Length: 278
Image (cartoon, rainbow, N blue to C red; front, top):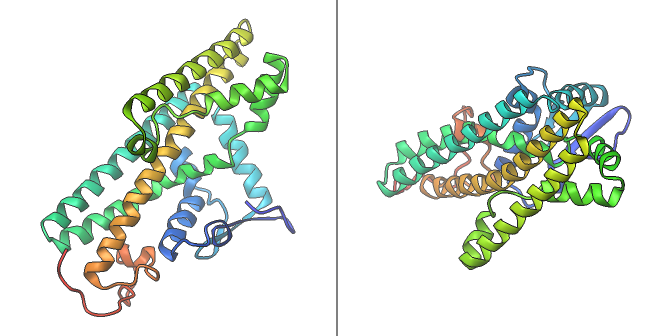
């Protein structure tokens, strides 16, 4: 997120993801403007699209929407529902990408095209969670933990431990020996549990504070897991889109989300005629 200028915040994926394709920029900008609807059923758009890759958010809109979300993140029922819904969203995307893989194995171009469109639409819901990288109320949580734990150092160590994912990332899991992965997982779990317990003990006797500590611990764990799984699904989707481009002779560096969703009346950006082979 760029600094506020003239009452406007700008999220510039062209700058932060300069090697991305227009399709990838579309995935980010569409999910960014829709995250309030996806994550808290709030129909207000988070800003407006300037062009593919850039979203402008009025400062008042930013503060209003994030304020509503931060208030909900104190509610354990909302947090539990958020986690449940987003986990279901990730599973849905994985299943449709499996269908894409099956269509490719069967040389079923029509099936691949349909499944890829479904996967793209479904992934927008998953990609909305990338806002956890900068929109969580971490400053408020840091102040709360400083009060509870007695120092900023302890608060930051606690926050760091609570942000460890419960499962290793795909790259780590495939490139590291199983025993090492298990050891890292056990170490991360132990750190999370120890610091969660310390914060809960410090909050004991104050029910609102105790509830907020439980909520922030759940949200931070969810955010870390969401980022790991989101990135894995993003790479699968992008790889599938590239495979679709190969068999349709579309240019992977030029296609947009409209091409994959059938919204472009002029057809995909092609270099030649489709090969028909998946």
